Image 1: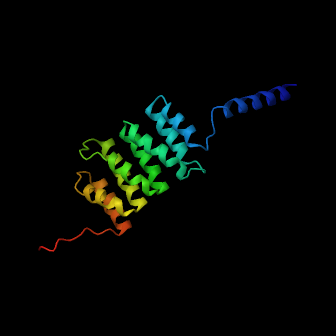
Image 2: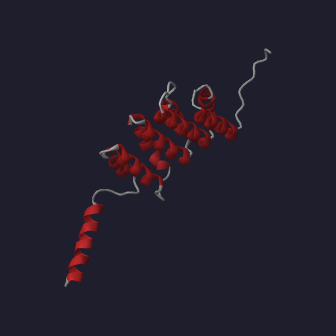
Length: 163
């Protein structure tokens, strides 16, 4: 009797949890990340999303929205990391817009580094100007990521004819 009751409870629990949405859809993750109560919880949900086997380019618009809306640089850095792994050229402009050109603290510098890595992974020539501009930032880790990204793209700065 206990076994059948626990089986019914398990099926009921699965049915109720399935009503919350489909974890293979961007809408589910947008709601889950947006509804997270703490920064730590958001980061955990972003890690869960990153490990999702069905993560594909259909998630890009939702991630662009998250990148624009989020305030925390560590959360933006994690979103940039995911966008870099998806390698969608449409992410170049949102990532470039998210760079903190006046970064003075560790989290913002870490975010800039993740954005530079993502732009390098995307390897779209449109990212070259942003990566070249990153070479002027004061954070060495971001500069190194920008150099590596430019190397991956084989981008070359146009040389002036004046010497």
